[in-house]
Length: 444
Picture (cartoon, rainbow, N blue to C red):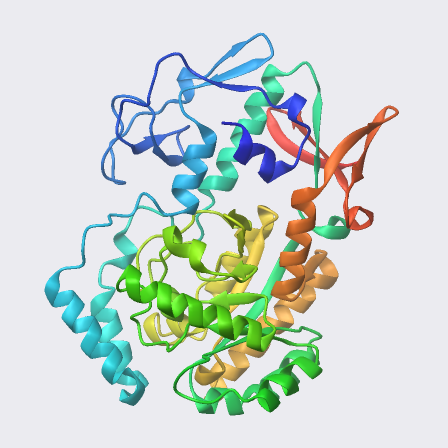
């Protein structure tokens, strides 16, 4: 039950002593419950859990107790974290027949539909998105705050005044950001050169996800021109027709083709079209990292959200969650070119030391307002890089770092600690401690 906590903080195992309460919860169905006034979780916790995220639900924080150096919990933290990261709280009931028909018709007509009509249809489909109580809009930090609360409890139970761990980002960077571009049309692919010029003017490299088997031909020359400028090329779905996850049999065949394109492109990463996903089927994929799971999916066709702003593993695949609102949703669903939402999300994520990830489509930067909004975003990010020590990297760089961190370990070194493992020269020892009953982080 300690695995997810240890994996999150990368701290020595001897400091983490959580135990499951004798009051067995395995016989109960999963449900929603509170862990403190402000934290809603989902999983097995005993009687009283709610079947809906609207509550009411019990607060189990009062059931935590310390026994010597152990902290006894009424739930398994690893199960709770995995339930949220893998979206197991989402109702998996089959899509109603009429919705399935509407979706098929929509995706068959989508390439020919003007944005104005698509926008209207999508707003109807997403009606009531702002009334959903869970995950929490505009950024859900449930997994991250769960682990922080557990660290607080462990510090209360431990004789140690502070607990060492491997800091989240290299060189002690405060947070991380990645910029990604999903290319949906030939016009978007043709705009890639100008888009790279814009990005380079702010010193920000990005990744381009291209559809490998439909709509347009992302030629070897086009991909090479992107890579030669220090940008990254990844695979975007297979056909981007909304049908990748319709049946498992068809998915297995499509996944094999996707894997072939991953090899052909020399790519490390992948993103599905429209962020459709079924994480239980990801064992068929052979790429290194995925970028298809939103933090909060209220403005996406598929509901859910992973409720974390940190990378996490789905088997051997590293998930780099989408933690901010997509440009299309901002411009055409919320119908604003204001920076306010993006800046609010960035600030929330950075306070959590998380991953600030963006999807900006070259296809939708076709107006002066959209281009100016994007340039303002790049300017803001470059300012944060200078003033707040934000690390802005390519997705493949984040993947490489997180995998290295996953293999590192802390070992005693005199009165302190040192980090061993590949990439340890970039890693930093940090300490979690209590200050006025609040969790604080400091560096060695």
